[in-house]
Length: 381
Image 1 (cartoon, rainbow, N blue to C red):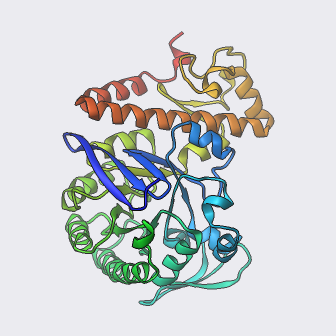
Image 2: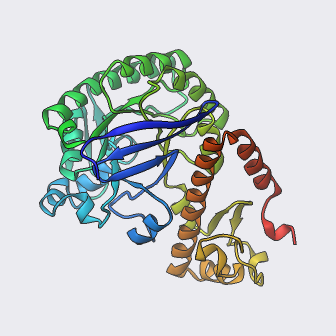
């Protein structure tokens, strides 16, 4: 345990970075994938399982937790770490993305966003200050500023307006974070780079945020439906303008390929619902690509997903059994496939970290992509 937030770069290989983040609840090895525990739980997983797979940090969602069970209740019950039985690092997002995408009858002003809850129709206001207050009540180690995440494609004027608003909200978020004593508790607040798919706006956002005293910096507003090549091009423009000595977090990303390519462009942290959501819908991630267990050709396949995997879900259950569970709608299907998927993601991150340390990240990147290109191992028999 440590009293202060700190980031240390341990190795570089090209633009890829190997580091560690220290928080009051432990050390996060980077590049890191953060499983998403939206409502205080990583769906279909026990916290102990998530930790055993190598996860140093999980993500909680401010919007959902403020609505149910409320941040005030979580605080009264001892904070989010105790509430969800996760004594390790927690990152909370600002709630802004969910306000924009889920809430009903929302209205955006300079002050913040007023919206109607999708849960019960109640009215709420989310301001930069209120977002920080909620995250402080939850007690997360890493917190995010409130920003406006604009949908793409969008006109340049709209993208610039949202980016400038997010910069002003960043200043207000930082002031509130400091007023509430976040730095003294060793907590971190990250600024969020916006700018849509306009390179010079991304650079302006990154540069102006970098002049503010945030503990880390995020790239937001990507992986929202734009092609992968657009996302990667924005990263190539953005990361060189971000502070070298602070962690860089690409929000809401993504697929294993997205992660591999984004590490190559200097990103340190990732989160995405993809591995858990896919697991609940019969899709498995393996080192040989994706396996759709809904497919009838698995019905009599006695082989596991990957007989060499360390994860029991991948190694000890046949594809035929997993197919049966998926088709029958059994809860165990979601549990086993989510377990497998998170295990694969964490194995990928471990491989990335070891490759950067050894100075062979490009070789690892090529080998990994070659394995994916070979496809489902059931086709190789």
